[in-house]
Each structure stands twice: as C-alpha cells, then as structure tokens.
Amino acid sequence: MVKDSHELRHFSGLVFVACMFIGAGIGLAFGRPDVGGAIGMGIGFLLMGLIRVKNVEPTPVTFSLPKNFGNIFLSILGVIVILVGISILFNPEFLYPYIASFSIVVIGLLILLAGLARYGKKETQKTVE
Image (cartoon, rainbow, N blue to C red; front, side, top):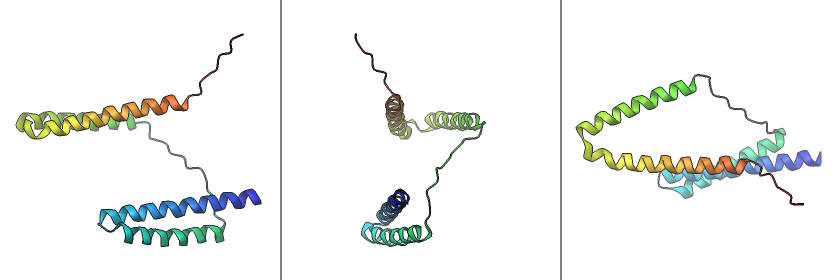
C-alpha cells in the first residue's frame, strides 16, 4: 500500500508540473506567461487532488503506426519536394534560406537520433584475463 501511495503521489505531482508548464506555454503565446502559469497551476492542483481522491493509477501508453505509414510519408515527402522544385524555378531568392535552414535542422535531427539510438544500446564489457 505504501508503494502504491508513493507512486500515486509521484504521478499526481507530474500531472501538476505538466499543467503548470502547459499553462505557462499557452500564456507565453499570448504574451502573459504569468497569467498562463497561474491558470496552469490552478488546473494542476485540481487534477492533483482529483487523482489522489479517485486513486487514479497510471497505465502505460502504447502507440502504433499503421502499416502503410511509410508509403504515406514518402508520398507526402515527394509532393513537398516537387513543390519546392517548382518554387525554386519561379522565385529562387525567397526559397534558399528556408531550404538551408530546413537542411540544417534535418541534419541536426539525424545526429540527435543517431546519438539517442546509440545511447539506448547496452555496451558489452570485455574482461582481460
């Protein structure tokens, strides 16, 4: 029972912090992060109380992509590349900064994903006898 109570308190605390940051982010979008943070904290306190009173237990979230997601993604990417090519033909001076910045972001994401994929793998230790 003590472990369950600790997990419930931990979960409700995470919900509170998430509401606070979401509220601050929405407030920042409207130029008032203080008001958004206060609203987010109020909602977070309410949810935290409800979670503790109702004994809500966190459940694992599963996410699966449809089998044809790769085909849809490649089709959309192909259309985007065609539109970029046509745009370059008509107005090349407006599109180059966007292409360069998008390329840098993609390269950064690839580096980040490569690092995260490497981080998740367990390294085997070799013992020297």
